[in-house]
Image (cartoon, rainbow, N blue to C red):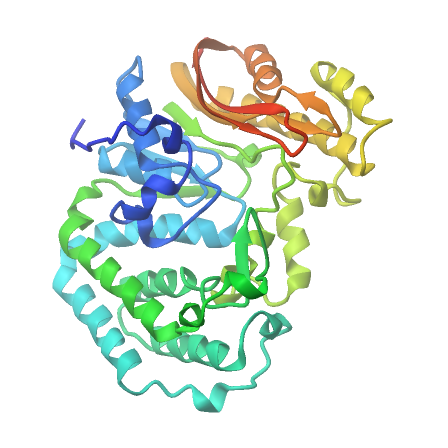
Amino acid sequence: MATTITTKNNRGLSGTFALNKTEPIHRWYKYDEGYSSEFIVNEFEKLPIEAQTLFEPFGGSGTTPLVASQFGIQSFFSEINPFMAFVTETKINSVRASHQRIDQVVGVLSSLKENVLGNLEFEPLIGDSYDGFEKYYQPEVLAKLMAIKKLILSLNEPLSINISKVALASIAVKVSNMVKRGDLRYAKENEKKQEDFDVLFHFVSKLDEIIYDIENHSGSVQSDTSFIHSDARQAFLPHEVDCVITSPPYLNGTNYIRNTKLELKLLDFVKTEKCLPNLHSGGIMAGINSVSKRRNIPNILDEVKGYVEQLEPVAYDKRIPIMVAGYFYDMDIVFNKLKQIMCNDGVFVLDIGDSQFAGVHIPTDTILSQLAMNHGFRLYDEEILRTRRSKNQMILSQKVLRYQLRK
């Protein structure tokens, strides 16, 4: 492998995004649903094969392909959220390209910072319509965001535009009237401080962080990544890959699209909130909001029927049994796709947590292992990263499952 990346041995935290908050490039956008670069480094070091190629079916903020690129491994990824796909490509491809012209990119970013701090013309934008999203911001805050965005779009250097967009999106929630506490919601009175709304300070601070990383760490990105398809179930790769390391959506009701709606709007991936359900329904059925008339589950898998039958009389929402059935139906299709695009003896590493609904335990790891085995994946190792308690005090766990494909 082409580079050395040190780890901190925080095994429990490595399954969360927490450790990435101080990691160069990884820290550009805080993705609460993700895991750390240390987790991926540890998995690379444990691989029983020498991986040259990797596919990440659920790209998220790009932790897996970014670490792969830092190891000189060619990577491919899928991601249903267009904003997250943009973040991933920017943190890898734009950063790698910027290393070849550091002075130019840093110069443009530094000029942008000076213009923001100099005399940002935001007053004429106060009160402008924002397609219904204006309710999530104070009028002056939104005007400043729009003024900075206008400056970014006027830059003449494409790499700097992409990088600056990530910087702007990274503060979208921070300066809004919202907070992320698991899900995105309106902040309560004591959950925001006045300094949280200081758009210029937060944007410039993020730019400084990014400039530092480009100057000192852009050379660590040794290979590009390739976006394959928004939906992992429809991914077609140019050749077989050696390795898959991923964390699919958890069966816990999290709406990964809605949680990034401010960023999606800010970077023009959606126009109104009416666009969000179509994006969400295109992914794995992991939340009750994924259950809609737009989705059809042809059959309930045998491995899941017993749990669906337990849920039907007790579920507090009639969509929950459908969601559970749909989740494993979708994941079974993903496993079948991975079998096709992975080479024989390829390694598949899966980070997953179990769930419970209305007191019915859903052993997600066990069911997924059964489905994976049906497609030729042999479980050779597993590890508990951490445990947690649900609201009804049931103990749940986050596990790493390691498989090798036997075609």
